[in-house]
Amino acid sequence: MRKGLIAANWKMNGQEESNEALLSEILEALHGLSAHENAQTEILICPPALYLQQVGKKLEGSQLKLGAQNVHPAESGAFTGEISAQMLRDVKCSHVIIGHSERREVFGEDDQFIAEKFSAAQASDLIPVLCVGETQALREAGETSEAVLGQLKAVLNHAGVDAFKNSVIAYEPVWAIGTGLTASPEQAQEVHALIRATISELDTGVGEQIKIIYGGSVKSTNAAELFAQQDIDGALVGGASLVAEEFVSIWSAYCSN
Ligand code: 13P
Image 1 (cartoon, rainbow, N blue to C red):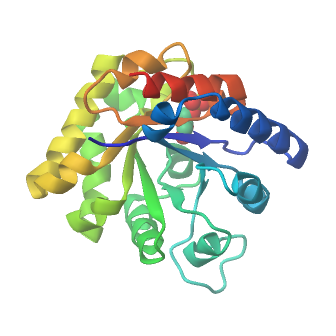
Image 2: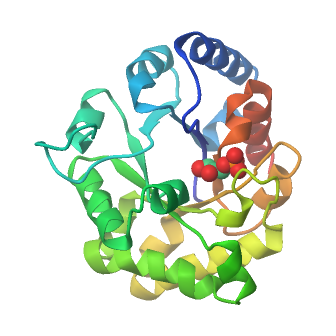
């Protein structure tokens, strides 16, 4: 059985004091869950890069993992403002989010650049969390599958299916991010199944074991029905991950699923 993953993407939110308070609340609430519940999932916290060390220190000794929100594909050099995969390893990150729609849309990252980031992350033993998802216009035009598979295949073609053995895919329909609109469980399942089938066609083992998590307005009130779907292995949570009670409830919904 695949172990689930509940990941918090804090985006550009938080400050030292509020980070400390949020993490304390999360860690305390997690103590209240049973060992059985705890064994069902991995939890990942992805704060802004500036706070990776603060958060990493706070998570020491806990089962929570540390992830970054972005990485540059080069090893080092003249890339003002950027951070390399080795630097993320240096501050004990295990994961990095790649290809989030906000990076694609706001910062103009294309499929090729995202594929290079994916490979650079893996070369430094980071687990990439590759985000894919269609815009509202593409969904309305009936082009969801083409859009999602196009993004997926750009990385598959660059890195090969073997590279997906140790990676996570996050399906995040762009129209559901931060909007309060969530894909229905059936809509999400359809795309998750398509992603898994596409990978399974290349390698059944990789397709079976890869975690495919859902993101887009996940909250405590809609998490359980999403997690009940066969191919949804967890969530990438934005806004609700900034509220300890919400985030822990989402985790708990996965564990009791
Ligand atoms: P929201 O949960 O705020 O919709 O954000 C989802 C997301 O983009 C996570 O990466």
